Image (cartoon, rainbow over all chains, first blue to last red; front, side, top):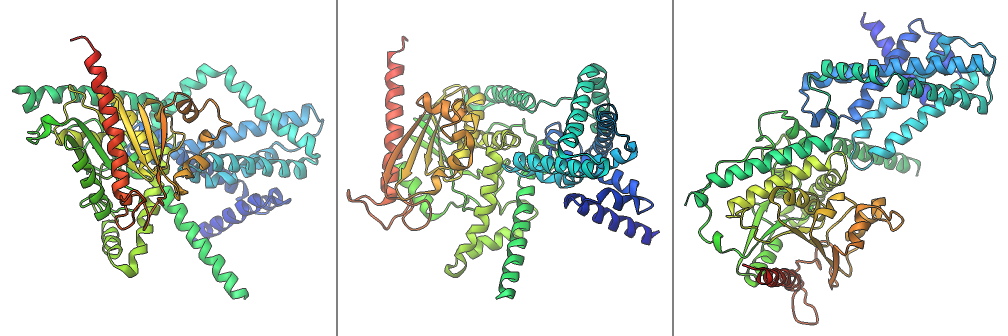
Length: 230
Length: 330
């Protein structure tokens, strides 16, 4: 059991390393291991959790308790992995319908999962001042991985590979907008399940509420002060 | 030669790793306090019970809050240089109340040697700083506090830290007898990195008290924090040999002239910042704004010159406010 776990961890490490290094045979490497797909799913879930950890200010300002905090990271990882699968499906459809090639859908999903490897470092987005550039760099890195993998696995040149990835992403965005209301309801529900708090993402609004509350306390304080009583 | 390069690279990797770790942990104190993780600190919107103000408080013509530079571990006491400067200021502004006990690099006014997990380490650092041979260890406190300046200037975390510092300042003001209904003029004096924190927390003080808040930045590092638009005026004392004061304007694109619509450039366009050259002061150490052993051509020590300029700024504002009050119908 322990040996299997260690082997799994080692595979996770080498697979993430291969993806981060833009290795041309990164997809082939994963299929060589019998639990290779589980490794990719784990990478995607961890990347999604790590990304939310980097953006966790929203959990803190909503006063999420530590237990719920951990659960939110896990749930975010799962939702992120599902989003990647959707993107893979759209990119695969694009390859089939526009470029007339018939790659395996599973390969497309593996590529999408591997492209999330840089976001394993997503927790670094938490660093003050450097958060935004780190976020940008990690996403660009992920895009490069997807391009490299699509080019090798789908046998496409850079232009069509870029088109597949980009059109797939645009389709996901369009679908998200189209199903905006039900998706927002689902998001709110998931948020409430994970954090135990109402979905209240606006940090500025929460700070303004606290400022108004402290100002009201100050007015009461003044009324109760010894100077006012005299 | 190869081994030297390897060792150097290893050292740099370890230093980078430690820096990243410290940077990752920097926002935790503020965010943890806000989220209510751990019951050690009072809730963000709480106030202690009212107490009897000091006897001389009612006569205060204005309130000054001193926010120390980044090289400190705590504020009780302040460094001898800072105490000397504030004593000079007090002598020149006899009607002013000075709040001296704010540690601006913590949302809960908790100094590095206060109740915190690394307290023992910071107590050792504080002791080491007192000895000539280990004085440079103050750089550890500087690094930690500079990261808090970055937290204050970050759009994500700044509001939480700045709200906490503003609350700490508010409590300090109330302890010194400040009466919100009287709206006595309020000045935040920020040295070095606390220039940014003075601007960030000053905006919250303005919202809490409804009174104009002025910032006097002594070689302060200022950034493109939107809070600057809520500050009545920033008076920036600039030393001729102080390069560090410009760091914020180099690092934050909102301060670059190209970002015309940024809060910083809008504040400049509105004339909300006045730069006052004070002399050939450095940012830190011998020759800084509070140096007592160097004199200018006018015979004043650097500390006396800085205190005289700050006092003149405050006296000018008070005179203008007095004139404005006199013009108002009864």
